[in-house]
Amino acid sequence: MDKMSGMSHTKYPYLVTALGVALMAVGEVYSFVRTMMMRAMFRAGGGYGGSGFGGARQFGGGGFGFGLTGILATVAVIVAIVGVVWLGLTLRKLKSA
Image 1 (spheres, rainbow, N blue to C red):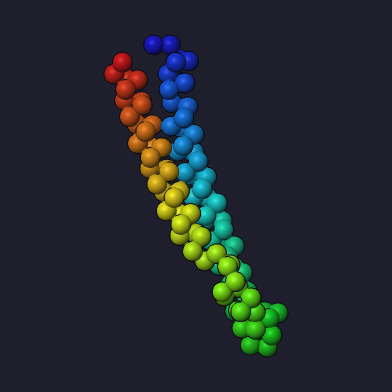
Image 2: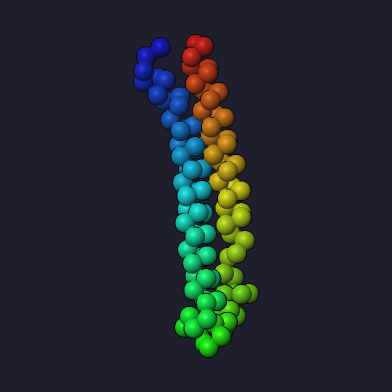
């Protein structure tokens, strides 16, 4: 089997795996930034009033997206697992052929 036909069979599994890993990286960065924002917001004298809790209402119920990282992480893990399994099956099939 020539190298190009093997490459064409593994292109999409590699892309799906890379997409899953990229989604996980985006979720981690988003989670880190969110944590740093919340830490700065709740710190005393953090610019949101004397007690530091004056700005909590701004992020609390207004769709700040606290559940987004959980959903994004779940989707990213599923996509990465599907990509790795698909890639493994494709490579196994190419090796046996």
